[in-house]
Image (cartoon, rainbow over all chains, first blue to last red; front, side):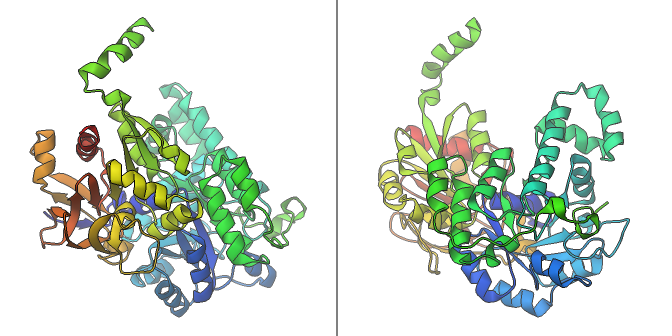
Length: 295
Length: 213
């Protein structure tokens, strides 16, 4: 009866436990408690939410381990933390802190402009961002056990999250209808590992759990992403940049569960106070967009 | 088409009315779809339960893995606590991981619990996610019920252990070190691992046999 840790089933398994749930960005232990109390299925521990990273500029790096530990001690739900794209030493440090999931995230300033982390080398599981099927399957090929569509973090504008979810899910629908002999050329064109393209076509979904992220700010946004076909949602700046974080967080949790029930969605959307101000992505210069980071 | 109709009308009688049995899966949060896929593979009609009205007409209920605090808070918010307790008095209920915590009498933390099984659980008993693991379990009752001899490959994700069983609850399975990972009390079943994450359908068959009684 030998026990084995760090298998892909175990890494992917935790993401499966998060399905139908909301993962919330928090920057203090107090916020983590508010998130847990509101029904978050996990929290993302970081020093600054994406909206502040945008506003303040500069190089965004892994958070202070002391903050991550304090957040971990404040709650019983899983705690995730972000490292920079390609920064495998930040990932090693986060693994040593016994963090539950690492987000190799475009929200931080990339450390490598060609390569991502070889995530198979770690016992801790990774989640990565994607805008299309090719990007998603390259990350799975490197060992990501969970995906999230990127959206445009820190904007409160859901348009990019919708674009990326529709792209990924639409491409999956397309390969499901392709004769098998066309899959090799398709894999070549989207730059994805052939075996994973085949697996995705036969499963009719990504081989790992796929959440939505980047711009979700209201219960209706969360339900929209769920109805489009994602497995759950990340909410970053949308909660703690709003007028009444606890109430809004609980409402988004309820909306993610009852995503097809418009009368419940109407009920939970009442009197949530001011949403985060938000930034219109279509009026944002290309240089300020972060979803393009990742290769 | 004709063959399909014929099969549907003939097989229930031949298959112990299995196809007339509707099983619910609590779909507040967690891996409820994974349970649904296995039940459908076994030819059972499956209903996602999000509100009290969804419990009508079910022969059994599975409470999936997920975050037990999230599931508990949503159950409270949507008035499911008493309807679930009422259901569990009458019909079989099986909780996997978070579901097992939710069924327990005591989870040693302040959180909503159904308190239907006389067990005390310790959450995240093995540590953080890096300590999550797979292991083979020899479960006599499962082998007897399904007429097989293979061990059951169990997946433990930030898993709880069942620290103690009392009253009518009894141990169904232990790890090699003696820690309890499955328990049964009448028609209520708790496992700290996730049979829904494997391709092995025997645990679901075992639960369905409880629902048929």
